[in-house]
Image (cartoon, rainbow, N blue to C red; front, side, top):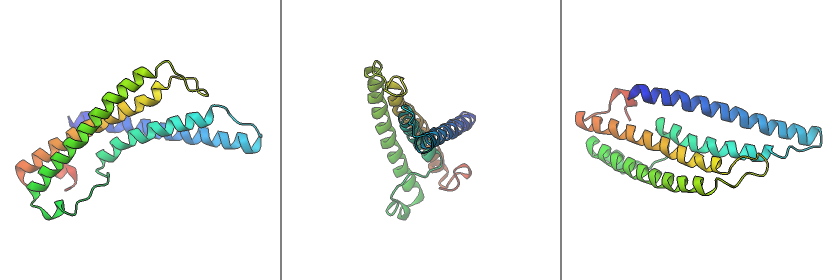
Length: 166
């Protein structure tokens, strides 16, 4: 499972860096076209927004991987280690449930919007909504991995070496 997660990490990083570079390049081209040549690209703003949406949904998975999502730990930090980890398990289960529900509704949006196209970039709007499904699926995978680590840590009663002691 660790090898699969490492491969997923690498794939996410490559896709995110590529999308970010493409978004910056498209927006830079648009600025040059508009202010240097007094001509605007009809598709650049739409493509930039499209890439930003994909970056955002991929970003939730990376935030989960790095354990950088915002959470309030004032109460949990005062609890015994095992109790705190059980609460982490409950929180992960809630996040997974939200992601699954969101992904299911995302799939219905992808299906219902398949015939509609973006005006500028001429691709189906479904591709934009697919980012919700992919992002939630990745977040679900990350949540399940975190739950497995929490269960292992609860069994031994202390943080695992692999999760940085959190």
